[in-house]
Amino acid sequence: MAGSLNKVQLIGRLGADPEIKQMVNGKSVARLSIATSQSWKDKSSGERKEKTEWHRVVIFNEGLVNVVQQYVKKGANVYVEGQLSTRKWKDETSGQDKYSTEIVLQGYNSSLTMLDSRANSNSSNLVSENKSSLPNENLNQDSSDLDDEIPF
Image 1 (spheres, one colour):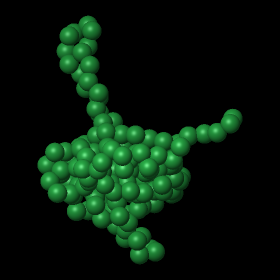
Image 2 (cartoon, one colour):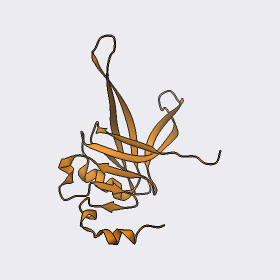
Image 3 (cartoon, rainbow, N blue to C red):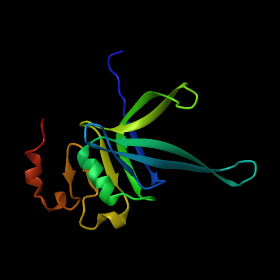
Image 4 (cartoon, rainbow, N blue to C red):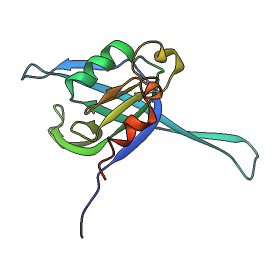
């Protein structure tokens, strides 16, 4: 295999307020529970059906954790981009090994975008670990300025 790719992109709604915790190293971590849904019309009955999937998202970047803590609440519509990670842990009651698969936002290629219009007041609606930009900031730039930033 020449290479591999571990990338997850989700658009969904938070099922609960973000959970912010302190790690032993003193840094904060945010945990989100995001729901994605699909709906269809049942061919035999004509009835509308819906299926919801729940996704665990863990954010390790301190800047993103601060934004999540201040601006993201239950019901918020968000876009997240990160990597799948499976961790192993022991169940305290049975002593059996358990596994949890999560979407981790950490490192250069992770991002969080708040999609709700109510979050677009004067705050940033695009926040990523490697950049933060206001949506109107780019509209005010002269197009000739943008040509200088193209790396090829």
